[in-house]
Image (cartoon, rainbow, N blue to C red):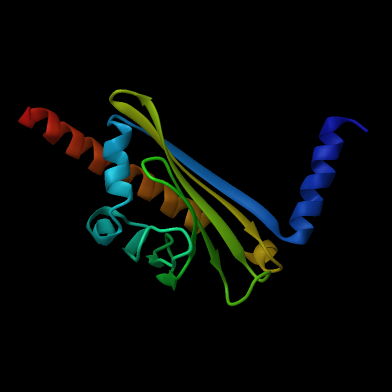
Length: 167
């Protein structure tokens, strides 16, 4: 069997099982530590973040966060994901779930990657699983991520520029 056919069959099988993912990245003209400072300051998300419009809770493995997201063109949705992994300065992973395991689960990863002294890349990646996944429309969420990524870029770059002008 050729690789394209195998990939297609596997893709259809995953879709039938309710598996999906999405990813969005942005390059930022600011040091990774500046991007992390903005990203990890959950209490100020309401000041800049058009997707996660409210956020609170401890960034600690095993703890729950309180998040409210605003998908583009949809109503606000609140949920309480559990922090699964934390590598300070680099990575946050949480799992959100609708009502119970296996219905609609999302494993969301946020990564800050240095690209040099004054540049970095921010990436959001989420894997979805559960019986309701094939019925979910992801476009409003993907659009929200894009808005969030651009807003993070603007805020981190402004903060980095103001730090440089003070020196």
